[in-house]
Length: 253
Image (tube, rainbow, N blue to C red; front, side, top):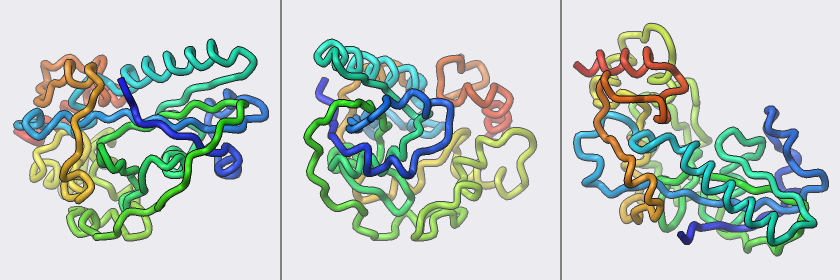
């Protein structure tokens, strides 16, 4: 499986680490960040009739990407026994998009999402931090073309041109616990999506010819239409509890 990867200097992001428990795992005297892309796009036909965000159609990406990146980390430890290697996926102390851009893997979109020239924004990001010095990748353009299609399409005005207002994003709102206001319920009903929101990604020109994932686990575990009877234990929306997804499914009735 040939996943896109690249190298960047840890010193480029050491001043902007995110406070979290995982931060303590960063190797002492860290020198290099290895960024790895995990594409999850299944092709348009696979999403016909889907009622959840595309990233949640397959098994929980933490399980799939975690297994792959840990295997890569273990191989690196075997190849370079004198160095430390620590893997991070999602719950990362690193500014993941910035690391991937620094590694020459793509650009950052107006909606703050990372965009690969091959797989578009349909990718998960992972990093391996090491105290071994690797040759860093050549930096390329860091920002998207700025067509503003994502900003124009956003139904809640969460994309400002200077980033995204997380608390306004429909994906964020659909994951809130408790009762939703009438406007949020109306938007969920209008989009037909019981979890998350893909609107800004669907209109992005970088996603027009995105390639299908080479990761068989994403393909083999796809369940595009979710009901209250769907087993959620290994799905990306399970962390919020069954009540949240069931509430949103009720809105779509």
